[in-house]
Image (cartoon, rainbow, N blue to C red; front, side):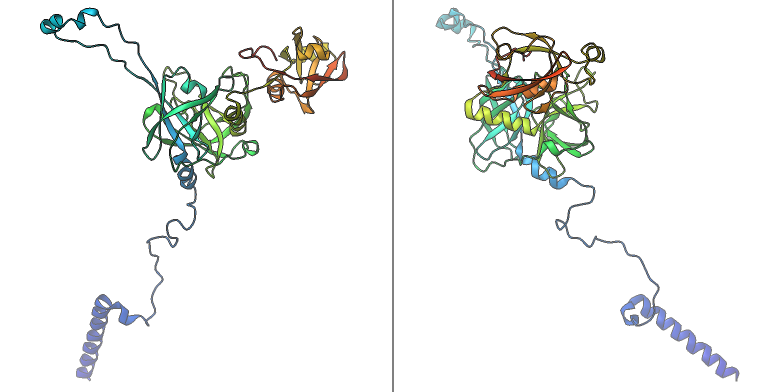
Length: 387
């Protein structure tokens, strides 16, 4: 009996050893045996490019970045006159020829957006002002000299033109439908370091009374915008253009971003661009009045229940408003059926009217509503104080 027990133990030991060796060297031979569940870590099931990455805006950036360009403006430095002695061969023999002082280019970095495959570029007017030459550098490393089609300092917009084949063009988005809290990307060339993408949200809409431009209706964003971003693209999460980056709020000497940046809505930029391309300039409506914002005290003194509209403080002689019967003390509350909330909104509404057309102004005079028809004039240049 003792021998049988030893034989049994030896057999079991040999079998367990054989299973251990097979399980270590050839586990596939034991596939029919029950196993504990395991968790593996490896490549995700989705292959690259099959679906957008969660939380990533790489597709939007990839779509918009090729359309954003760097702008180098060249301003020649005056050279000193060449002294007549330098043309004397005896003088040159003994003293050599120091040559003339060479003109040194002064480079101002900015950005722009290709909006048409035919070569039209939108940028800021202040980026290209007073430039003797303009060079555009594309994202694909091509460089070309650009010409100015036209500028509009009152909206701080300019249109350039380049002649190159196979140009990418950005798609315009519906800037009127954007909302506070929407994710946006700012693309440009901050501080000349190269093309850069920053991300943020829309912080506010319709910002005005900032003293940046004559006509202000800015999109405010906290996407980092720094010097060199001016004229670059503000795009939505689909890579569509919703604004042209224009200015930042900063208290630092270098103008570093503090999270408050301003962009011109794409709808405004598109309208200005189309006029510049068609006529070389922008024509705006004008009626010839001076205005100020309404206050609670003014509204109470004029017996107006709402604090809205623009108080007419001046009516310039011989202007459309004068001929139409507008008087000092009137409160303008509507233009062509659109409400006037303050002097800034009035400026934009009047400017949007076509010169030579007729428009209906809704006024409040002596606490009574009144409508007046006026023939819109053409806005004089550099007279923002008159509307």
